[in-house]
Amino acid sequence: ARLKKDLRKKEDPWNDDKGITAVLSEIREISVRVAQLAQDSASYGFETRAELGERTWRTLREARVVSEYQPQADEEEPCIEPTMASELAKDSKEKFFTRTMLPRLQQLLGDDHTVLISENHRWLKGRKPDLVVLPHEYIQAGNTKLAGLAGRVAHPFAWSSVRSLVEAKLDSIDNAAIGQAVEYAGLIGGKMHLLLADKHLRFRAIWFENGAALGAVTGMLSGQGTARFVRDFLLRSEDGKPQHEVDLKSALQVFNLTAVSGSAFLGIGGSAAVYRVTSNDDGQEHLALKVFGAHMATLGEREADNISELSNLLGYPTLVTSGRLSSR
Image: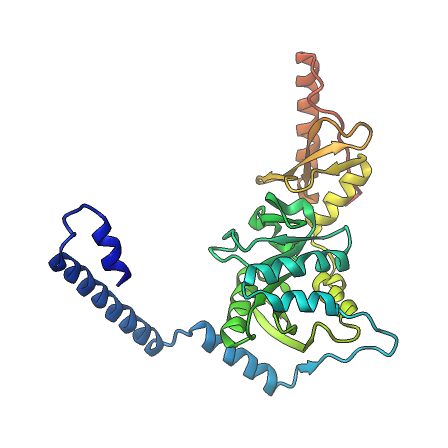
């Protein structure tokens, strides 16, 4: 009916019942082909998200690695307070749920990590997780929305710095949602934590390694002590940091620099990663910080010498400073 209405508004060759019937016939044929494709996929052993999620959750249950969250005796603070819970219950849009939770999650995680809204950016091989937790140096920000950065993870190089993902669901956490979590974890690889939450404040916290789910905790975000649990789960601090992140932090400290929030990552080549920074001495001029890996340290020193010579010839200080971060 909507198609007929739209077509009749337009002055084109399709503006007659015969043409509309032909278009509707084509749509029906496409629907039949899509249904056949789904049937063929099942016969070849491909899983839908719901089937993948059901199998994953069943495997975790059978392995007895799913537990209900139990607070410590001295823990009282919930992740979601009653006031926020009532706000979340008001709206029926997933984006509202995500962005209402975001300031609270940022408060729990502190200044060293950013909760990035990426629900409109297909940075993960065509997928777009709702929220991403990672250091701000690896964010390509679009703009600021409701007290949180909106954008994408800057480069696949930085995927290993992603601490965790958060996916919000409205009514319930079904098998398709779990299947989606498995897809995300498989694409990022390595160790990954993923928090699924719905507007009724139920959650499933699942941890992965190389795409395989290893265990899960379920509970209510309004439950006693969940603030500490959610913070520790999302930060994944016990797993340590990737070497490129350690090197960057060291370089910033040694040279008294600050990475520019939301646009620090400039790119990566065969030997080094480059970041946009400012000096803590004046904080005005933007500089480029090039960080070489340990195996490329000699090349980095040679490049610094060449740039220094060129700077002297040009009479312009293109190279501010350079040096080794350690004896590695």
